[in-house]
Image (cartoon, rainbow, N blue to C red; front, side, top):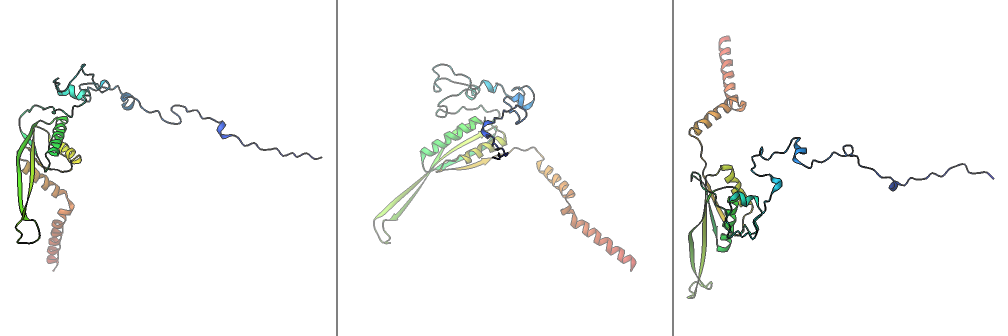
Length: 247
């Protein structure tokens, strides 16, 4: 009997093979510390920080009560104080008492108005903006008296009243970019039912108008679109003079 010389091919089991990850070859290693990321020793003093971020938050004293214990802003910012948003925000002292912004709040509901002004005060405190507190403005009251039915000579009438409550917060001695960030944060997290009117003041050095005019003239001299008409006019005058000489 003839024997079959063909051999059976055995399919290898893929699951039997394992791949060992070699650091630095298959995938780059991920930095775990700022020193590995930037290639130098991490120094929080070089970043302008007073405390090491790796040691934050700092522990608070035992039986701490934010209503009874007075903390500085640095202690508040470096510690985790539960319920801090409930108490009044920290008021940064003014340096020159120069007004930089004024925000007026309007609402038909006093509860919503008080909540959002409290939120805006905490946001200003977190950004280091000195504010003068929440000022209550006079309430605008509007009355309407209309007939109770569509009949024009109806004797029974009905009164409607609308009240617009107002609050104001004034900011002092803050940089313009910080104020714009504060306003943008309030607009991003605006509360429904509360309107805002923002007024800002920018301080510029003397002679800023003349400097803008000089810069505009320099830009006009280098702008080809603005100087092209004058060049075309000069070229036309030269062509006319040359034609007159040849005539």
